[in-house]
Image (cartoon, rainbow, N blue to C red):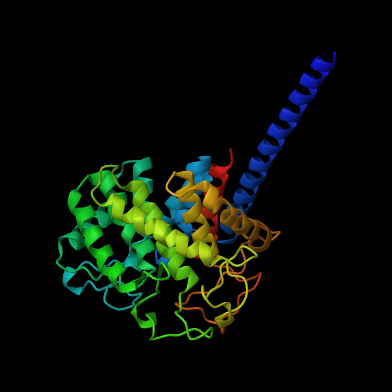
Length: 373
């Protein structure tokens, strides 16, 4: 009888543990859908295809792939159709620009106008309609044939533009896309990667000693800038062929950046806008934190980063994202507004929202959900 009772007790405890895990996983999914439903109920899909909106749609796409909810797919298609499956619309190639920041329709080769192609390619894979990737093919294949390699002169571009080449490769299997991707990445890497800290500067203006922090006049690294890079590298690696000659290099940089990022986390789980000196811009910040969390989780989920090493970092980050960044109504707060540096003059509070911040949160949350066993 004692043995039977012990067995029954053990079975009960196992069932309770299993139920708790199921509830926990469902709770995470409920939070993710609450966030996306809030965003879509408060924002129409009829908005431009520039980076700020397109970054949200990369998060929406990740959640659609997880849930197969038709309304998320329909919302993305409405957005893509509103933009005619294009980014910048200039047709005269002699007028295409990228060297400086620009929101005009002639900045076709500027990565901030190209990130929308990532979503269009994903939508093409669901329904092979040629118009969905015609512009992406025209622009990116043209870019791949040029002799220029300085397209990504700022860190953000390594999320906006870098992953498009490997994503488009999964459709075309054109090796020239991967060759150009690697050539351009190496140029950017040589400019912005700091080997000592294992972090990326935002752009050439911020490379030490051009800009110094308030903390011992040290190096200045902007969280969202480095977050774009870690998330972008994760996207590249997941689409690269397993036998690609470039795969080892990207993975090595991904591991180095992950180590540099983990060292900068604040005790409360977030990353401050100025990664090595919170005094530059004190307080919570969600977008950089979410991109870092997504990258680290993706690395652990795919066996590239050791779970034992990074789980404490991830757990603290998720606690911040799910308890501080996530508001009761489903909005995502504490997102630094559009900028390029740790700017203390920009207000960041619980009501600070942005499409790219919500998109980053969705990416991190979907990977967190996948990590739950």
